Each structure stands twice: as C-alpha cells, then as structure tokens.
Image 1 (cartoon, helix red, strand yellow):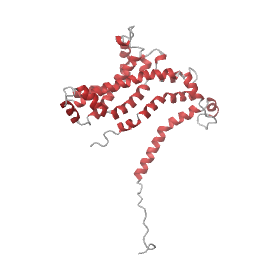
Image 2 (image 1 turned 135 degrees about the vertical axis):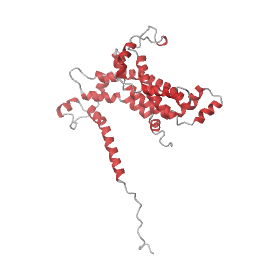
Image 3 (image 1 turned 45 degrees about the horizontal axis):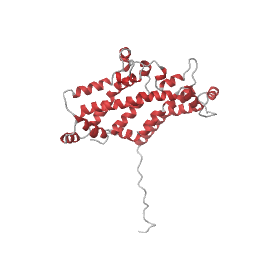
Image 4 (image 1 turned 90 degrees about the horizontal axis):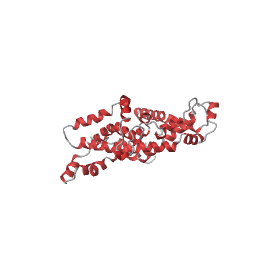
Length: 299
C-alpha cells in the first residue's frame, strides 16, 4: 500500500455533549448576572451627574472621569470610617477564629459527656436572628460597664468599640464552630494520640498540631468573617450613638442628602467601601479556594 492509497487518519475529536454546552451557558449567564450590578455601578460612578441628568442613566456616557470618587472620598470622610471599620473588624475576626477553633477542637478531638450538646448549642445560636434580642441587649449595654483593663472612667459598653466587637464575635462564633469542627473531624486522630503519648499537653496539641493543619479552613473563614463584620451596619447603628465611631457603612449614609441624593457619587462611595474586602480576598485567595474544596476528595 502506497502513501497515495493509504487511508487518511482523522484526528480523534471528542464530541461536545449537549449537557456540557448547557452547563457552560448556565455558568456564563450566572457570571454575567452577578457581575452586571458591579460593572453598572462602576460605569455610573465614572459618569458625571450632569451627563446622566441630560441623557438618563440608561444611555451612552459622553464623559468618564474619577471626579465622583474624589468627591465621595472627601465628603464621606472615608479615612476616618476606614479606620473605624478596621478597629472593629480585625479584632473581631481574630477573636472569633480563636474562640471558635478552641471550641471546635474540644468537641471534635475529645469525647466527653456534653460534647454533642455543646456543639448543638453553638450551632443553634447561629440561627438566632439579631433583631429578636435587640431590645434587651440595648438595655444591657446601657447598664454594663467595661472591665477595668479597658477603661479608667467606668465607661459603659454602649457607644464603645469593645461593645460592637463583642456582639459581632458572639454572633459569628456559632457558624465558625460548625465549620471548623466538621473540618477537624477529617484530621487523623492518630495525630492527637501520638502527641498525647509523647506527653504533649492539650494546649500544645491544639496550638502546634491541629491549628496549623486548619490553615485553609481558617483562611476561608477569615475572608468570610471579615466581609460579614466589615459590611455590618445594624449593630453599629443600634449600639453606637457617636457618628464618628461608626464603620464604613456610615460613610455611605453620609452621602445621602435629605432632599437629594447624587446616585453617581453614592455608587463611587460603594465601590470605595468595597476595596478592603477585595484586598483581603486577594491576600487570602489561595487559602480561601483551598478551604472551599476541603473534603471534596475524601471518601
């Protein structure tokens, strides 16, 4: 058989299944649906108000600039409110992860009488709506003083950063305990038994053995918890009367006028307020994605 008469070898192309096409189409539509509000907010923030006043919001912009971002940053006093949000969010996230990891370690690595009851209590606390307890909590904050190490003038929990940090920790611990306890159960119990056999105390096992192995889960929770606490306005609005102590969401509230609100400036302020959460996600992106896929290959 010569080369001229030899049959042509066709490349082996896999046929794309209709299910995969439908899946890609669905994912594309969902991605566009989720990104559209963000892209529209950025487009609106770059347009001067005079352009939208003449042509309407649903129109092609004739001018794009960053004047709305400068005005929002200045009029909204963003540096002050950035600092306020970080003062509340960073300690609250650290305390939440520390307390929840301790509880998760206790209920997942050791067997004791109230093991399951303790886990159920923390999980049930996560299901409690904050609005249910706001009246007694508000009265309690106006009666309880701060401990001596935190104040010298006997200040109350009300209108203090410590009070807002505390209530955020209380309401976020339940969710973190649930996630971390499920992850710690996937770790080999031989690690704990080997450490106990070597004479390591419980604190050493928790801090040097278990906690480093939970780094992906902690990073994922840190990203989520920072976003939850950073974006919270309910507790700061109720438990703080001083406007200069409130978090970044107050800066957006300050951009709204009594009779008129410049939507373009407000959109620019919303994008500015989202910058810290985006930076935290980018910093923890690798561990965050690893934390989301934990247990996907465990049988």
